[in-house]
Image 1: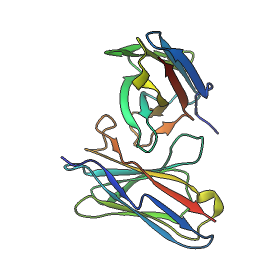
Image 2: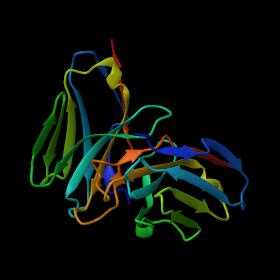
Image 3: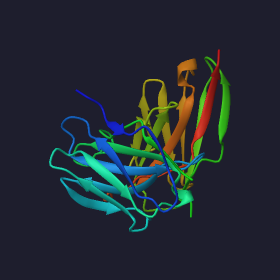
Length: 113
Length: 112
């Protein structure tokens, strides 16, 4: 049984660029949630995908978008990067959107210069 | 608008003693509460949860207490061990929702 993996682990972008972050969910999990964790703060919910459909969205602008693939892996895309987008991006997979089965990946640290 | 708050950013406790972490929330629609532990360079891991129909849930050394009227929950760790040193997040959700709202975290240091 593999855990939740995310790639890349770190990356640096400049303001205005676009970025794609990837997440492979735990085997058997059909739900992926994405969170943004700014330095010194708790994770903030971006959106959730369940069986390839968006299943809820937090208070983030449309330039944050996502996809879930038939194998339940997922991508987070951020367009027109801003300095405030610098954060740790966490994805979490779960079975049927259950919180107790939700496992987080180690995150991707994004720095926007 | 911070709906879930952990007012103590850090806590230091001696090994073997009790650690008490506090969390306050403002949204009365929250029905489900969870605690997560996070080590550096790892994602948060689920620790324990409680639903609003209960006031206490226990799992080994970890106990969560919920006071709905005060909109307050706490996590007790007893006895504390050096391996418990981590950042702890409380999180809340509406029963019918899918969004977890996290507090800002409390960094716990357990001294041997």
